[in-house]
Image (cartoon, rainbow, N blue to C red; front, side):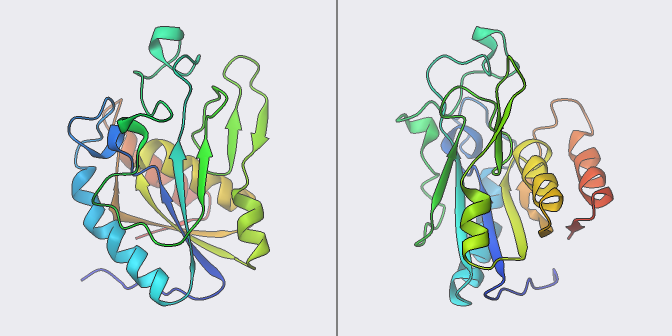
Amino acid sequence: MAEQTTYDSTTALVVVDVQNDFAHPDGNLYVSGGDAAIEAVNREIDAAHEAGSLVVYTQDWHPPSTPHFQKDGGTWPVHCVRDTWGAELHGALRVVDGPVVRKGTGGEDGYSGFSVRDPSSGKEDRTELEGLLRDRGVENVVVVGLAQDVCVKETVLDAQRLGFDAVVLTDATRPVDLQPGDGDRALSEMTAAGATVR
């Protein structure tokens, strides 16, 4: 039995990008096992909600054309285009009263829930996530969702850089593994940054 995560007023649950394009087998960028992680994600949502902890959802929300996409010179197949089925939160995900932070809305790379990066200039801008957490007096974040070696990793690394204590729950996330072993390397990178991996 996995160690139980403790939620309280200083802890927030950040649910990263549990969207159809990542978590549904018909999605454009399906993360293998992404749908199987939703039960564990929902367990955490229930626990956090019952404890009165803040639950925040992040959502990739790209325009139809962006340098983020392969067709426009980027790395990734077209995914999570705003106002499409692929960008919607997965139907099996439990959505409680909690803000949704949308990222990549202007065509940026939106890997972290905390920041977006212009793919051409490299200029970084903050999302509203840090402000939402600070306003609630949050000191600790539990990060779940997709994908472990991309958006979960970048969200955890940013959280640590910004002074939050981050925990990532491996049963509630799955890696893309674009290169074999990316998921394991991501876990090592998060641990090296001071995050707790459980």
